[in-house]
Image (cartoon, rainbow, N blue to C red; front, side, top):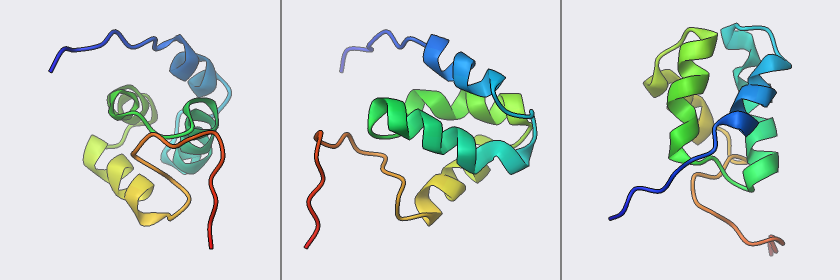
Length: 80
């Protein structure tokens, strides 16, 4: 699979808005998901490093909450 170039400037701008602490993890993930409509795998390393937690712990937060998606979604989500 070809590696795509990922623009980290969006993630960096989001990280600038929050304290560099684990308590900011959920808010940061929410903002990233709002921008991309899901959580791209590329965002976990820079976020984890910036807020001082492991990627595994950050991934655990993302998979624990139902509102986070690790898969790209369409513009509109319909739930029945």
